Length: 213
Image (cartoon, rainbow, N blue to C red; front, side):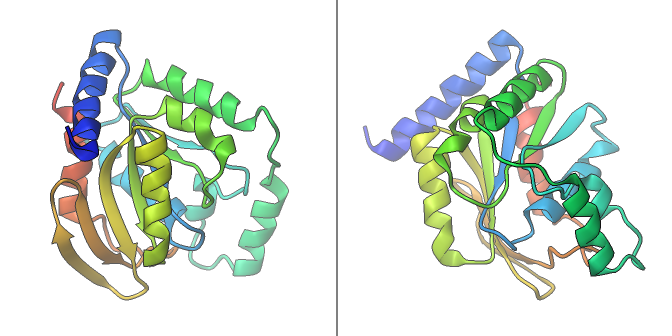
C-alpha cells in the first residue's frame, strides 16, 4: 500500500470513528503570514452560517485579530486596527494550544463544523491542535510554503486535505485540480476587499460535514 493510499484509508476510518463517537469535523485554516487566513476564515464562516447556524469559528492564536477586526467599518484606519489588535494581543504559553485543543474537542460535541484559525507558523507547539482537528485547508501567498504545511498537517497530523488556495492580490479564480483535494488560485483575501467565497470552495467544504446529516 502506498503512503498516499494509507492516508486516504486513515481518513475514511477517522471519519467513521468521528460519526460513531458523535464528534463533528474540525477544519484547520493554515498557511504562512500575510496570506489571508483570518479573512478567509471569517468569510467562510459567514458564507456557511445562514444555512448551517450550528457551525463555529475558533481563533486559536494570540495576535488579537478576532472577528471584530474584520467587521469594523471601511472608515477604520490601519492605525486604529493595529491599536485594537495590540490591546487584545496575548502571548504563547505552554498551556495555550492544549487549552484551545480541549475547547475544539468540546465544540465538536456540540456543533456540525468547527473552523479553526491557528496562525501562520509551523510550530511543534501546535500538535495538540492537530490532534483535535480532522481536516485542513491551506491558503498561501507563497507557493514554496505549501509543502511544509502538507508535511505538518497531513504527514504528522494525519489530517485530511480539503483545499489549497494560492492567495493572490488580483481578483482571480482559477481551478488547478479538484482531486484528491481542491487546488485553486484565488483573490483577493484582504479586509474590506473580499467579494465572496468561490462556489467550488464552498461545495468542497460542505462535503466534510453535510454528507452524514
